[in-house]
Image (cartoon, rainbow, N blue to C red):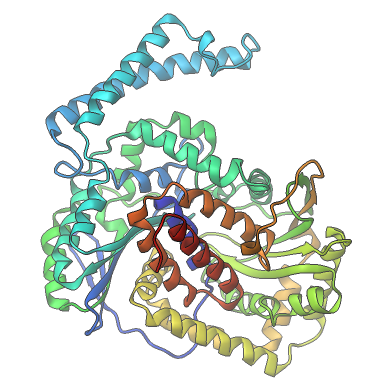
Length: 578
C-alpha cells in the first residue's frame, strides 16, 4: 500500500504552484518543544484529513546511507511498545540479538566484497564463497527472525485505524520531506493523536533487516524492472554533478544492503524530533480541543539537543552540455533539462507560468509538435523548484517515422520563440485562469488542502499558500521572455535521447492509449503493485485515486483517470466492483 502512495504523492507534488485570490485561514500553534500545529476547521464534514510532515527527505542523507529517509517511511508502520507485538520484552531481546548477529554478518560480507574487488572471487553473493562461520551466522539470524515472527501482529497499525473507521492511511517520501496521512472520523480524533504521537515517542523498529529487503524489491519494481528506470536514474546522477538530488530517493542498492539499525536510529533521533515536525488537520473539529490534544500527546516528545543538520553541498555551475544516449524497450523520445532555480526564488513564478504555457493539450508544445508539425505524439515541460535546487524539464515522444533529434530541435525552436517574441496577453491570462481553477478545486478538498499545507510547511512555510498566488498573477510577458533567455542556454542543459531497442516489444494496452511513455511506465508499475494489494485495501486506494483526479493539473488528468480505471479493473478481477 505504501508503495502506491509514493506514486500518488508524486502526482500531487507535480500539481504546480497555486494562483488565484482564495485565502486559506489557518490557526497556527507552536508547542514548547518546537512542534508546529496547523488547523483549518471546516464544520459539516464528519471526517478529518490528518497528517504530519517530517522535514527530511533524501537530500538530508549522505553517501553510505542513501535511501534511509524512505526506509524510515516503512519503519514508521512497524509499531510501538504497545502496537505490533504480543510480547514486547521478548521482542526487544530478539531485536538486540539480531543487531549483534547482523554486525558479524556484515563483517563477513565486507570481506567477501574485498575479495571480489581484488578479483579473487567472481560473485560476492555466491553462497559457495561463504565461510562456515558466515553460514552459521546466517542460519542463526533466520532462526531468530522466525522466533520474532511468532510474536508480531502484522499490519497492527493499519488494523487499529481501520477498525475505528479511518481510511487511506499512507505516507510518501520526497527529496525534501516525508509526509504521513490518514482520514479519521471526527469523533476518533483523539485516537489519531495517540497513535501518531506513540509511534514517535515509543517506536520499535522491528523487522528492520527484513524491511531493507522489502525496499530493495520496491526498487527492483520501480527502477530495475521498468523499461527506462535504470537510465532515468543514470540521467539524474549525470544532471546533478554535486548536489544530493543526484541520488535516488529509494537509495543506491549497496547502501540499502548495508545500512545498520544504529545508523538508522541516529537519523531518526536527529530528524524526527518535534522541532523538525509539523501537524495539519482539516475538517470538522473544535480547534481548542485539537490544541489541547496536541499539547497532551505531542507535548511529551523531547526537542532534539541540536537543530537538524541542513544539506551543505550545492550544485556546481554546469559549464558544458551533457548528453546521454540509451536503447530501451520504449518509444523513441528525448528529455531535456536545464538548471534553474529553487522553490521560492524570485524567478520561479515566471518559470512556472512559462512551463504552463508550453504544456497541456492547449499548450504550445502539443499544438506545435503534435498537431501542426506531427513530429511527436506527446510533448510537455515545466519547472520543478525543490528546497535547495531547481530544474526545468522538457520531454517529447517521437511519432512513428520521426526521430528524437527532430523532436529535440522542434522543442528548441519553441524555446527560441519564447526568447524573442512576447507572449500575447490573452494567452498569458488563459494560463493564469486555468491555474486558479485547478487551485480552487484542490483546496476545496480537505485532503488536498491538508497535503498542500504540509508540503509547503516542509519547504518554505505554509503561509506561502496565501502569499504566492499574487506573485504568479503578477507574471508579465516580459518576465517570461527574460527567464527564457536567462535559463535556457546550451551549456546549462542535459539531454537524454532514447531509441527503441528492437530486440524487445512494447505491450499494446488500450488503457495506455494517449499517455506519454513515462506515464505508461508508471501505470505498468502500479498494475504490478495492485496485484499484491489485498482486496480490502483496494476500495480505499480507489477513493484516494478518484479524489486525486480533481486535484491534478489538466495535463496530468489523463494519467489520473487511467489510474482510476486500472484500480477499478483490478477490483472487478477480484470479484468486487463499485
